Image 1 (cartoon, one colour):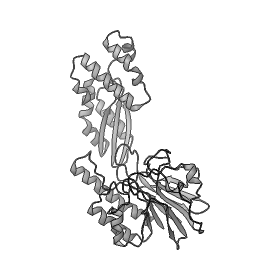
Image 2 (cartoon, rainbow, N blue to C red; image 1 turned 90 degrees about the horizontal axis):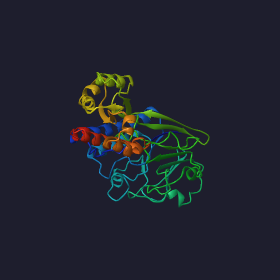
Image 3 (cartoon, rainbow, N blue to C red; image 1 turned 30 degrees about the vertical axis):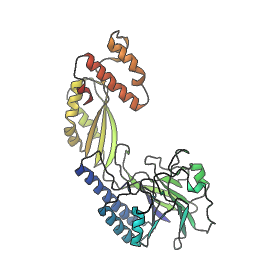
Image 4 (spheres, rainbow, N blue to C red; image 1 turned 120 degrees about the vertical axis):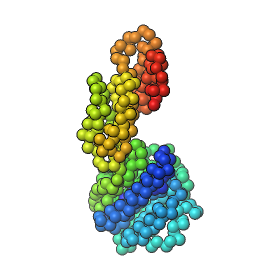
Amino acid sequence: MRLLHTGDLHLDSAFSAFGARDAEKYRELGRTLLENIFECAEREGCQMMLISGDLFDSKYVSNDTRALFVSLVKNAGIPIVISPGNHDPYSENSFYSVIEREKLENLYVFNSSDLQTFDFDELRVRVFGYAFTTAVLNENPLLREVLPEDNGYLKLLCAHADTSSPLSRYAPISVTELSRFGFAYSALGHIHNREDKEDREGRIRYCGFAEGRSFDELGEGGVFVVDVDEYSCEAKRIVLSSRAFFACEYNLPSDTADVTKKIAAYVKQLSYPQGTYLRLKITGSADVQTVKEIKSATELIREDAGLEYLEIEDLTLPLYDGKYLEKDVTLRGEIYRLLLPSLTSADAEEKQKAILALKIALSAIDGNNVFDVVK
């Protein structure tokens, strides 16, 4: 059979980091994405859709999103199976319990933290799953219950779960444990950035993010279209997102003449797709004025490179030679040597903090305005 596997859409996210106008624009993009997913299922000839949790970002679902979802499900013509996650748990008066009153014949929502099944006789498929009924599910229902007797149907799992840690509060289960149940395909949700498959055969997969919402979700999002039976399982990733988040680094040359043009040319040759949100990290050595010049040209660089959004992150070191500072007997050298372990750390966050601390210290010693450094 052929199915579409998605989840972790987090529809109606607050997008509180953006202004009210942009936040609503991004919520509208989420609804467009939902339409694209249903169109993809029809175009690819899918016989079922599995949504493995966190379809919505919270229990609040806007009227626009609710109306669209109901319309799409009604017109889908295939079973839509949902396993509510920790962001959109099934509870009294939750979206899922309310939507049941619509009597959507092809919508199947797990509504208990105990293991449940849906049988689809025409497809000869049984789907196992459960629901988060609160924001936490400390134990995976699969590990505390006995599976019902095998009825000869193809066994699928649709679930929100965490395979990364046995101490997780989000239905923890290991890949080894999951493999023992013999599901033909396990459609998982919860971990957004994951490898293409969890097991060698590709029968256990996280849906990943369908469309990035921040720089925590890099690359183009999409869904899986899966062809599965008892003997084989093949999945293809289909990109549906209209925007994508990327990050890259640019090491400043020693000659910083026309540096903004050089940066624009560098970003442009990377050929990012339309709708790219880029975080550009500038590294190397630079004086405060050069960094200010680059940041002030952010919009020009964005337009020239054809980006939707550009954010410039300053990771440059102050324009002092490291070897010189190592031997410097003044306060400059002492501060540099003190911070050196963190400046060379493999931990990106620690390194970034150390660079900023060094910049502030050297700027203060030189009698400059330290606020220019942190802008």
